[in-house]
Amino acid sequence: MKRAFLLLSVFYAALSMGASKLLPQWGDTFWRDSIPETMRQSYIAFGEHYLKKEWNSLPVSAFAEYKKTGNRTHYEGLMFEKRRQLAALVMAELIEGQHRFMPDIINGLQSTLEETWWGLPAHYKTEVPRTEDQTVDLFNAETAALVAYTRHVLSDEIGRFSPLLVQRIDQEVSRRILQPALTTNYWWKTAGMNWNPWICSNWLAGVLFCEHDDLRRQAALDQIEKSCKAFMAAYPGDGGCDEGPHYWDRAAASLFETYYLFSLFTSHSSLLTSPKLLAMESYIYKMYIGNGYAVNFADAHGNRAMMNINIGYPFGLMTGDKTMCQYAAWVGQQEDVLHQAAQLYNKSGNWPSLGRELIFLKHIQAFLREEPHEPRLNEVWLPDLQIMTTREPFVAMKGGHNGESHNHNDVGSFIVYPDGTPLLIDPGVGEYTSKTFSRQRYDIWTMQSDYHNLPRINGYSQHDGKQYKARIISHKPGQLTLDISGAYPAEAQIQQWLRTVKVQKGKRVEITENFALKAYQAPTQLMMLTPIKPQLTKAGIITLGSHTINYNAQQLALEVEDLTTLLDATLRQMWGPHLYRIKMTLCSHNLKQHIRYVIK
Image (tube, rainbow, N blue to C red; front, side, top):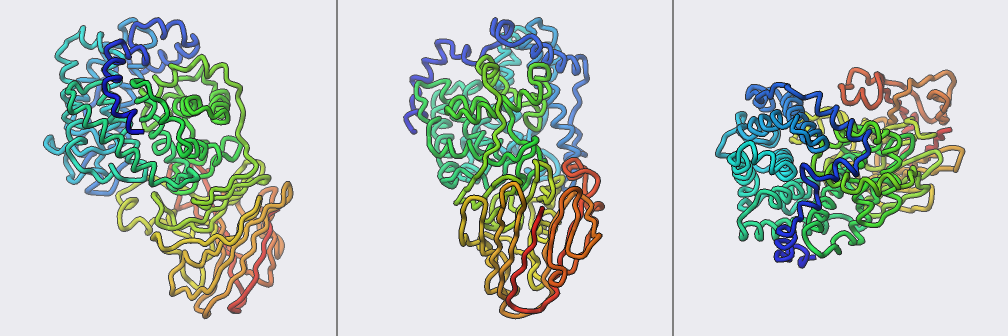
């Protein structure tokens, strides 16, 4: 692997021989001849939306809100929209090639370069950004990449306006990311979570297009290699993303993006054929449910399919994964990429991912020839992450531990989607606040086991920490048994709690709870969350739309709680206006019990 990063002579040769052709620049006939006209018009219309629009400064009062009130969405919304404005204009100018958007782009670049810091207040020490503190965070890095890619594809046009602006871009990218990333021993450089490859992929773009010092470039390549190796080494062998499908896009996909950029400028491509990278890639379609839904364990801000085609298709193409390529083609077909290309581009990140779109469009003709196919895998088992999916009906169950990245206390939870529609669900996560990544994280209801499909045992909920974990008892297709007692504190007095989820194909889902307690302390309750209002019209049967949950009414007492007031805008977008919690309280105080309930 190291040779690919250290073949600097090959890198220089590629660069000097016109490696810019690998990502076509402004004026290249590629943009006229290779992109379907309907796609071209979509990008141009997106850019026209921002023509002559004022470039707003980012108010320091909004930046300070995170420290003062805990709100992070206000500043993020303003910042993301400003970045979206630039990304839309750049793609429109690149596609049209008539200089029509250049004045707005020039003004946007200057406005961006004048900002004090490019990151988010949630990742900054003080309530006001300071010129001397250029901490490298996710969005400082991603803004640097947006500016660097803009400089690359529009270099001649920016230089025609003023060579001084090109110089200023290089200086600011260097000052804000290239220098601090190189000289600071940031924690993310050895992390096994999304910050590592997310930043590295953007850092590398800055190195490729804005770094002109040979020794610094070499040193940066070495550090990026080391960071990527640390990230991959921390990943489980089954390729599972413990941060959940929502963060796969900036975890495994960003690792691929980093490797792909290196492959453009070296003659060595074995980085893209690593077995672990292939396993990491496949995770995203292994978590696909159907009807556009995806498993949403951990910090997922959505329950829809979470694969952007502008990275998913190149990932599949470069690694030779036909399932991934066909999945991307299916998403493109469903989203009408031929006519709505800009809408997909707009949704490809917190703001449109310019670099990824350039990579995707480089392969657009191969993409258009791809046969679309929805990846409804019958069985998935990830033994390291301890996730099972099976169908039909679709069920996903997870074990693992409560110290995972973007963790929720959800060891042993499961979701049920009959016919690809949500029935029993994982709530996901609402809008991020100052609590989300603080010591108060587990004060947030969506992080708690009581708001997942789990038992509250002897009056105790699960605890957070890597030591609170499941033990696999058995797995076979359509059935998983876990001992989840280890996810609860010792005070819960649990000797053993065996939870089995079993799918009888085409019929029903059977859940059994076999447990032994050391002592009785408080009533035990089984929780289940659903967006469908439960109807308790008959003892022993809960009706959820066209489905039922059958239980022993002599064993369990039913109660339904309306959680509607807990929903914020993000959660309502996922589940609609209502969410309910079914609470089944065990009637007996016996220390050993066998509970069975069936979803039909």
